[in-house]
Structure formats: structure tokens, C-alpha cells
Length: 184
View 1: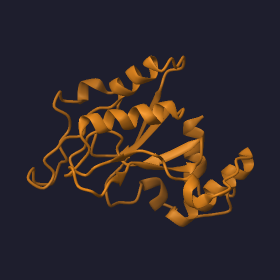
View 2: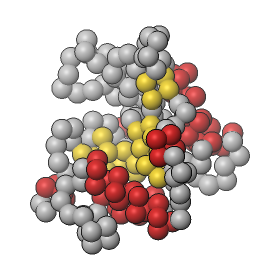
View 3: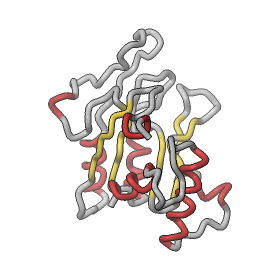
């Protein structure tokens, strides 16, 4: 199901009457059409897309949000849902609290578009310490991407989830256009 939603959102076909490289605006319009087709209403769009999960940016007063609902209750989008190289990033405790929150919200499929990291289900490609951000100095991005699938699976089991979580990986090189969109 999650792969079908992903394909519907990115499809520049007559399904949504939009063509070309997806922009935030076009993705928002597509999300509205998906919500309408599923009968999902959003009475207060300004607040219904917010996800109640933040981290403290290294102890500063200004919290940073992890994610937002694109289609409330069905499709969430956001940054990497665990610890990451960017300082000041979330602590391990904040990352685990965020994963637990999205598992409890019913999220059961994670799609990663980051070419910088291996797929979550490719355990052998993940170093124990995590994956550093390549092409940048360690002083600028000192942390690591930590593999979140084991934690997410454990949290789902603890929450009594009977279905397995799914992980998709559709790598897009940072600051580039995917080849299937570029050729349109």
C-alpha cells in the first residue's frame, strides 16, 4: 500500500492532472486529491498537519519538528527519523521517542529517498557506529545516521503490532533530480 501511495504522489500522470518535476505545491495538491478520494477531511489544515514530536536542537530553547502529515492519519513525511550527522541533531533518546510516537500513530511503512545511506533492510551495509555523511568534513557533520529499523521493529512489537513494518529505499542523490523525473 505505501509503495502505491508513494507512486501516486510522485506520478506526473493524468491521475492527478499534473506533469513535470513535483514541487511542494504540486505534491500538496496531489495530497488533497488523495485525501478527497479516501474521504479524509482536514477541518483545520493549519494544525492538522503538525506531528507532536520535536527535538531540542542540542539543548536550545528552539525545538525542531521531525515530520508533518501529508495526509493526516495515512501519510507522514519528514526528515530522517533517528540520529543523524547534522549538528545539533536529536539525541538517541529523542530519536527513540519519535520512533515510538510514529509507530503508535500507526505508521507501518518507511520510504527513504536518501542516496547517502544504505537501505534499512541491508543490515550488512550498516557499520556499527552508523553512516557518516560523505563528501563533507566531519567537523561540519560530526554525527552518524543510525539504522532505525531494529528500533522501529522492537517498538512495534512492544506496542503489540501484528504486522511487520516495511522499508523502501528509492535513492535520490542530494540536490539532484531523480532520473525518472529528469527524462520527462
